Image (cartoon, rainbow, N blue to C red; front, side):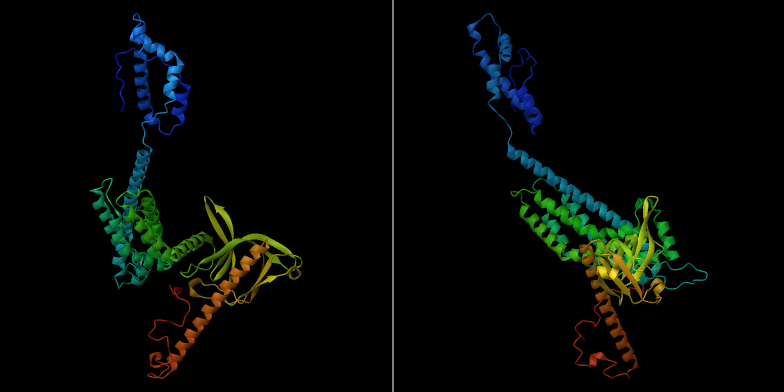
Length: 495
C-alpha cells in the first residue's frame, strides 16, 4: 500500500527493535507488519533531509544512517501506533471464509451420502428385489430364495424414496454451485427439500423392523451367502449392509448441524441472512418433532450391538425390544448371607439378562450367564432384616422362565433373584425401572389375551350375527375410528 521512494539511498543498518519484535510475535495480524515498516521508513527519511544544509560536507546517506543510531527519533515513530488495517474488513473476510467452508462441507457430505445410498441400491437392493419376485422354486434341486417379498419390504422400507430424494438434492446443489459467488443465496434451494423430509419419519418408524430383520436373515444360509459375497465388492470399502442401512438415521442431524453453522457464518448484511435463519428454524423444529424416533433408533442400535456381542444366549433379537437400564450388580445368597461375583445386568423391555464381559482379541464378548423373563413377575425392595444385614437389595420373583428361541417358550418353576445394587440411589432406580417394565408387560399380556378371546368368540359365533361382525354393533365405538383394542403396536415376534 505504501512504497518507500528512497531506493537510491544506502540500505538501513540491521537493528534489533524490542518493541517491534514483540508486536510482530504477539499480533494476530503479522501479515500486515511489512506495510507499517515501509511507512515508518518514509517518515524517517523525510525528517533527516531537513538538516542536510547545516553541514554541506556530509552526504544524505550519512545523515540517514545517523538517524537510525539515535533512538529518540525512531521512538517517536514507534509511538504513532499506526496500523493500516480495517478490523471490520478482516472480520468480514473470516466470516466469508467460514461460510465457504460450510458450503463445501454441505456439498461434499451430500455427495458421499448419496454415493453410499447408490451402493445399497446397486449391490444389495436391486439383486434382492429381483430375487424376491421369483415366486416359485424347487427347494430340493433349485436355488433357494434369498428373501421373500415381505422380508424385502421389512428390510428396506422406503429406502428407494430416500435415494430419489437425495439424487434431487445433490443435483440442485450442483446446479446452484455452477453460478456461485460471494453474494449468491442458497436458502431457496434448501427450502425446496424440506417437504420431502417426511420420508425420514417413515424410515425411522420402520427402523427397528429393518435391523432386526437383517439380524434374523443373517442366520438363514442363502441370505448369509448372498451378503458375504456382496460384501466383497471393492466399492463398499469395508462397509456392511447393516452399517449402510443405519446411515439415514443420522441424516437429519447432519443437516441440522450444517444449516445451523451456515446461518451463523452468514453476516446480517448478506442477501441470504434472513432466508438461512428461516431454514435453521425449520430444520430445528423438524428435528424436535422426530427426536423421539431418533432416540429410539439409537436404542435399537444399542440393542443390536449387545445381541451381536452376546455369546451363548438362547434368545434372539426382537423388533420391540429396547434397552432400559444396565449396570453392575451382585446376586445375594440368603442361605449363606453372601454375595456372588459381580455381573453386568441388562434390563430390556421384556428381559433381565446377566452377562460376564471378556476380551476375545480386540473384541469384547458378553458371555451369557442367565436371564429372567419379567412378564407377570414381581419386584420389591428388601430391608436389612430380610437379607441378614445386607442393605440396598431388591427381590425379583419370576413366575416362569421363558426361552423365545424359534418362537417357543419353556415353562419352569418360579425363581427368586435377590440383587445387591450398591447404594440407595441405585436401588431406587432399579426398582422403579423394573416396576415400569413389569407393568407394561402385564398390560400387553392383558391386551393380547382380550384380543385372543375376542377372536375365539367370533370364530364360534354364527355368521351374520352381531358378535361375528363387530361393525353391526352400534355400541362398538372403535369401529371406523381406526383404533384397536390392543395398547401395544409393532410386535414382530412372528418374524
